[in-house]
Image 1 (cartoon, rainbow, N blue to C red):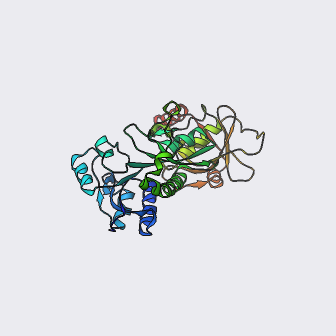
Image 2: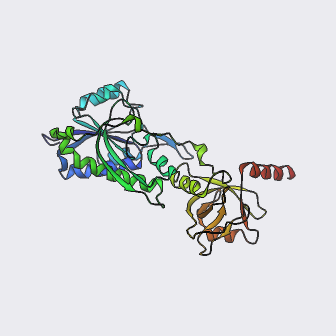
Image 3: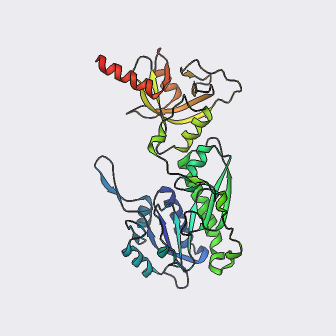
Length: 347
């Protein structure tokens, strides 16, 4: 460790945070922004897979590969963890999707405070799922914020902020990584002003009255009831819930039983005045790249890639060819469950 360089502790958990950590490790090794990483904090390993093996978080994997000390407390209130943090004497803590509430005892430790990388334009979308809710809402502009952490969630003064024009084809996992990359660069550029105190004049307090909440995404939100939403709403939910929990709808090929099909990629019908398919029928688009269907309000949604249970993802043309001459249709949950129950009784 180099004398005189500021001591930084990084806290994060998922892959997007691991990408931030990679950028910070590279910056520290290059001597950029006069700091060194003295430890990394992540959530404890979790059991995953069929064999339920303990799996380290992406941040822990990245930290250990860089031979950085790693702490994995059950939560940030843990007394042993707080004692270990105090021994590290951090000048600054940096959080990126850590996933645990930080108590005041924690926030009082680092000399220069705690900076958080948050994938929204605070005070918009405070909470657990900011980017997913931004995509779900179909916002044309999003962004990333670097803000100081206070006891109230995502309410601290803003140090840096960067807007991004959202694309109709942006999907959550890829966009999240992009946001954290941009946010880490913003933070690195701002660090000299943190060290010399000049950032104090540039801080922008958040207006609580402008805040919106970004509630945690629930697994139940994955189901698309195509009879109750528009094509725009369905498309935005597919983009927002890409990765997890993913979105699904009931599809039926010919006389086969209905199945829960994951909708991986969709698009909106681009030609003006596209005639919707009749009823709940699916129709292959003229370019052969999408399956067209009419949502409950008559707007046309196009499915580009789907996954059937136990199968690999397939494009629209491959799915259509698998339907043979029976065509395909979408169903509501009530109709699909009734069809499955009827088939079961008949058997």
